[in-house]
Image (tube, rainbow, N blue to C red; front, side):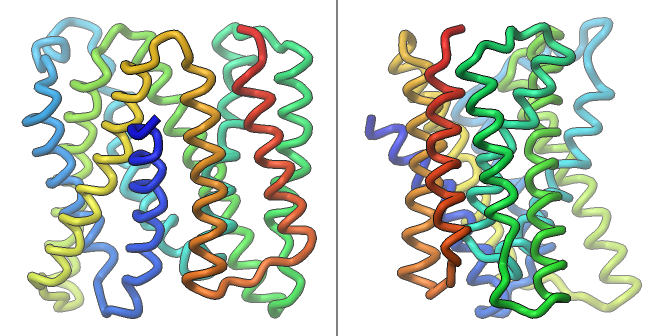
Length: 286
């Protein structure tokens, strides 16, 4: 269970670091860039993926290239969402992306739509509507916030679908992650070069250090989650539910208590519905 708790903590700390970035004057784009270098180095060092699998005919390079574009783009959107919509709503939207992943599994991957999963899907969709609501802010600020939340919701589901396609191709997950991290770093590094030439944005050690820390937390979230599944091979639903519900609850506590984020009654009801939806989906018969 401690591995799940470590994964939950790393996931929420990613949001905390992104929340602190504008207050500390950290350049989020540089942070995201160096985050992928740190994650790639850790992946190669600790997981030792078999790169030979990607030299075989039919290797899923299209999915890997899509993932390499979506991952850093989604990280930048996540940072904007944490800034404008808050940690509470962003973490819940991120975890409720499983609804779209589940819908894709029904439509494209032949998964059975049992009553518990359908009930969880219905509850989750209601929860999404409640999370998007933010009546206490101005119309323009609220519109920006819920648009970012929608992109987070859809973006993490897109990542799940790409990972599912990679798994179906037979590519080892660790090798796919390493290549995706390296490609994402190369793309972001090229963008930093363009920013330097076009806008005079200088790289800074404090931005790099914050990015490395972000990469440590990002990779920690992944590796502790994988290790938890390995430690509890007979209880994947328990690991999945505990991880997602834990992020929702800890993210809510940190957002409200540490950063003073406001939540409406509708938001709080939506969080309860989100927890119930995740539990129903995770514990539904396979």
